[in-house]
Image (tube, rainbow, N blue to C red; front, side, top):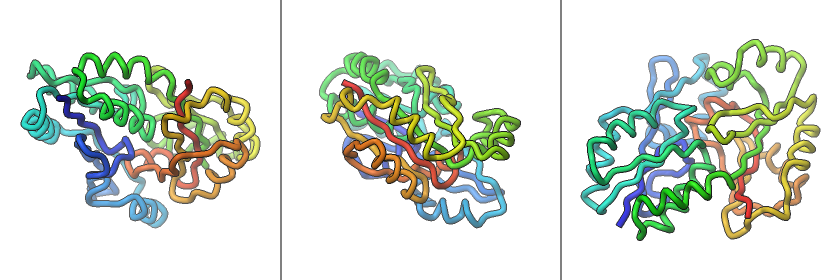
Length: 269
C-alpha cells in the first residue's frame, strides 16, 4: 500500500482527498506568516493581496514538517511517495529528497509542475496506490508530458517580483499593456509563450494551441483563475471546452500570478 504526500501548491485543500497528506507552504506579508490553506484561505488571501501594502513572499517546506508527514505516512502504509512543487520553482523538492534518502521506502518525485497540474499527478497516484512506488512513478513519467497548461496573467509584475521573469521585461510589458501567455514547460519552469497586446488576442493564441480533439476527457479539465473568474470564463467560452471544475489559484501560487488571471489545464490523449 502506498501513501501520497504533496504540498499546498497542488490546489488540494487539507482533507479534500483521501489517502494523501497536503503539507502547507507559507505565505509571508511583511512580518506576518500564514500556512497556505490553514491560516489563510484563498478568498482571504486575495482580499489581503488587494489591500496590503506589503508584497507577499512565499517560503519552502521546512525539514520538520516533511519529517512529520513522512512519519505519519509510514505508520499508515508500506511506502511513501512525495509529490512536491517543481524543483525549478522551489527548494522544497530538494528538502523532500534529503528526507527521503534517510529511508528505504520513501520516494520523492520531481513533478516539474505545480497548481492543478500537480493535482492531476496526485490524483493519478491515488488511483494507483495499490501499486508499488516504482510502478506509480513509471505511470507518472508517462502522464506528466500529457498535462498541458496555458494561462494569461493579468500582469507580469507579480511573476517579476517573485523572481520568475526579469523585472525589466515585466515593466516594459506593463507599459505596453501586454497580456502574456505562459505555461510550465517540460523542465518545470514558468515559460513565456507569447506576448499579445490584449487579453482577447492572448485568448485567441491559446485557442490556436489547444487541440480539442486531443483532450482526454477521462481526466479532469480545469478552468483556472485567480480571485475573479471573469477572464477565465471568457477564455473557456472562446475555447468551447467543457471543464470539469473551476479552480481559484491557491495563495502560494497566486502570490506569483496576481489577481484576474485565466487559464486552462488538461491532459492530452
